[in-house]
Image (cartoon, rainbow, N blue to C red; front, side, top):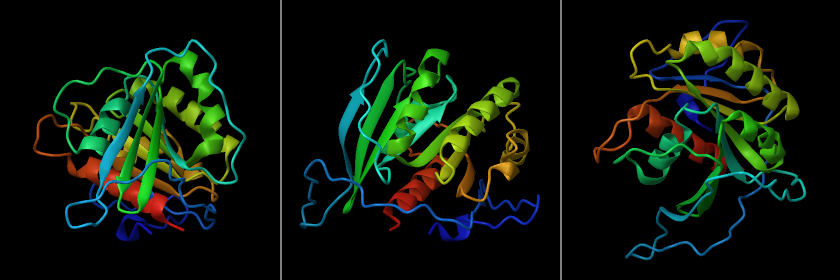
Length: 242
């Protein structure tokens, strides 16, 4: 359990702690252990370490992807959001711990796999342009956690983000949601309280475990910002829950 990051909501009341606001449902999604696909690496002392062992990126999505049979429980972290929200940069920071250079926006699909001790976590990002949004719901059946990224400095697109998010949550009534209010460092960015209200997250529904975290990118080798690290740690905990 994410512990102190989860705060119960009563009615419309919202409690904020640092950069994290979490709403916890009373129903939990039954999960299975993530599927192991590759041999994990070992540290010098024989213990299992953390590393990224697979990066796959497509530049286009002209062909309809092949969808496997739905699983009883997902094995992936599905990363979605409108184009320009910062999904690829966040995923890069999750994988490497920093953002050392500009990252090109994803025009198709972007996948990485991270090993954390005995746990393998698969992240799948799908681009947010209009032609790619049709693929979002196709991959919900494989998702164990949904990460939805919103550009908090672009309030004009909040209504569109809300509508698309509502469609995703309606398609899966128990899928855990981590909403990232990204670009908090940009002038005019809306805080997580404003974003929470704009996306009407109070009406998400009791079936969803909800967490809202403010994030921002900082370039260089000094490491990810606190919000990005919080989001990464929370996702790892959620994927490791039995």
